Image (tube, rainbow, N blue to C red; front, side, top):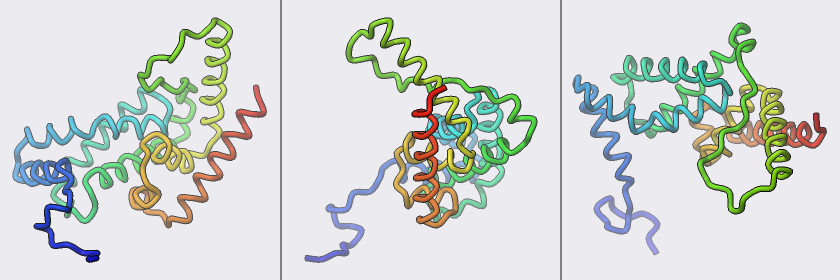
Length: 199
């Protein structure tokens, strides 16, 4: 059985999103503003989610996401395609979010908003007691997330919220694979300990 197949082999599936991104990047590098706008539209939701899960504050997220795409616009000519566009964007997004979080003034402004629902309706109608317990648990989880260092929170957001592979997280954050696993384990342990400790 052959492990390698020629690129023309129909058994190899190419990701059409990657191909479309490459086309849009080429057009945007050539000055096509509409192509850049389309890139922003395609990647804005995931960039927003990653930044929000690191910063936990809506207004700060808006500021940082704008910074991310301004940086992308300025740096697009330097993007060589060594990594997927989404990996490159996530790297910029996480770096900007962590830099933003390090400023003391921004730390003061951050709130402990509860995790936003993923948009899935509840399977059954909760009783008032269940609704109260769920609200308290979300509030406790949000409070506990605030205690997780931003660098660990970034790994947690990329793994649990964006469902990225460990290797992709390592590429986005520029970390060794072992460091990614270690930070994720420590972040999860800290969260569990905090949630179980209660208010």
